[in-house]
Length: 243
Image 1 (spheres, rainbow, N blue to C red):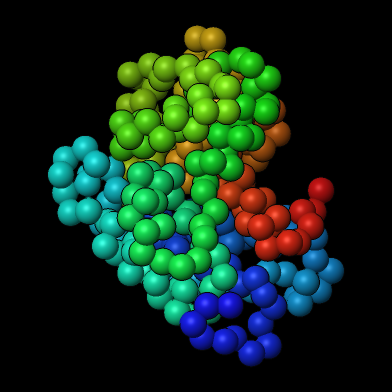
Image 2 (tube, rainbow, N blue to C red; image 1 turned 60 degrees about the vertical axis):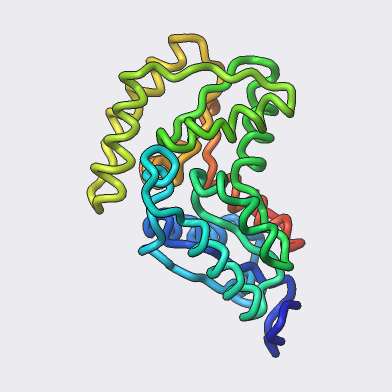
């Protein structure tokens, strides 16, 4: 346990660094409950949640030199550690770029949404090309390409018009508190599969919100990053995943 003992809490306690974005964090917590094999309240994970929605935008920092979210991320994981979290998760793919800043400043480990998603995508693709639907910031950092290629996978490029549509869904719809355009997302999926991708990793948790709400989990060619993070968190806590 970290600095503060949590009497009556079940270890390990997960620290959730949320608000990036807010709707994605709510969806993540919902999935933790849905996919934990629990018969009672007490069978579920104990978690400390920070919904820090005012954290600076990650893509703006990466692409346009806007204020970095790194100091805020580091401070918040330190808060989780001091509060008693045993490990932490971050409900944002773009923020993966700043993980080295966090890891060097705190004493508890994290679960990487990018690593969990890349592993699932490579397994699902079975050697076929993988396309990653993500923010422009995530794409620019190359974090998914690095993880997928390290695992022996192949990354398929995203067409510019598809990226523009994804950016609209992420920023103009989900982050703006509006419903995500499921039809537009499905057209992006169809066009990308037609261009040769075997699997599409939804590498933005705003897209995950649309995926979960619209029931796109029936599509075997899709691998969702927020779902992967929820499952990895359950397993990291030593709990069983509900099948």
